[in-house]
Length: 345
Ligand SMILES: Nc1nc2c(ncn2[C@@H]2O[C@H](COP(=O)(O)OP(=O)(O)OP(=O)(O)O)[C@@H](O)[C@H]2O)c(=O)[nH]1
Figure (cartoon, rainbow, N blue to C red):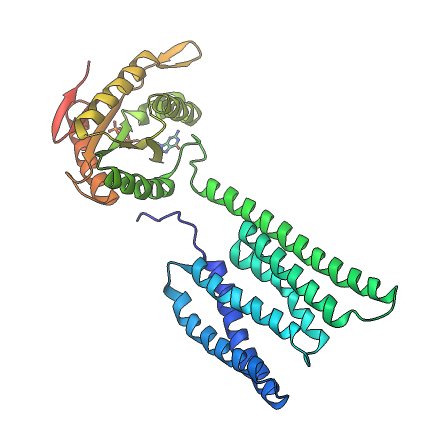
């Protein structure tokens, strides 16, 4: 089964879902308290926002636009905090909520948007707080200002560092998950991701796209005769040759064993055959050398074309595999497209 490498936004959905429940429950509770205190506008805002959060819990489960909905939730959420801090009769302890802004912004919006969202709302929160509550005499008022400013900067910095490290680790893990450890080429999962991107690009620009399966010939013999270590070296050597014959717009991956796949953008099946022929010649020119002994390496390949042989990767690989089998049966060291054999010398 082919598994996609696409990184999910699952952790953001989880944080947002929890936050929405807290907002719904908190909205109902605060609204009741503020009705008793006669703060009708704030009570109304809180209950409407609580109900909005309840509706969002259903939406975020399935939406593909999680970031848009997150912004639609967070901006009013932070604005209500500012309003609660601004209006008379609310407690100075409301400021505690301002400290949640950096954490929520970074967790839900990522580093860049999180930074700007934190900066804007925290600064506005501190300014409002300053005018409403910092009425003590000097130097007490300065100490209070320092307290809330430094605690806000600390929260923002921690959130920033956490999110930066999380993003870097995520990138590193995705990179590792998409890389074949022996050859350093992309692996099957990365191939799936790239196919989705390249086939969409091909459709948008109305250009052809070809997929090739390349399989080294008699590789087992190399393993048996020279050992697994030389087998591994042969795989790396072949990967380098394939890479050097591949355009930057193409995508080369090792599927496993001695099998490689190549996605060629702007190539028909016939273009792909020509291209693979060039690579095949490259293999002839550059055999492996082990302790002064020459080990010739050849490959067989099968080619399939997008929209001619199929529209999804599974179908194209299966078509290419059928043709690869034909190439093997036709004596190896050749390329097959459209069920015809292009034999080499
Ligand atoms: N050294 C090494 N060998 C591997 C690796 N993965 C798979 N193999 C070996 O690759 C060999 C593949 O053998 P076969 O499937 O018979 O293929 P072949 O000998 O190339 O024969 P044809 O494909 O029919 O030309 C097996 O001996 C596997 O053990 C690897 O990562 N390193």
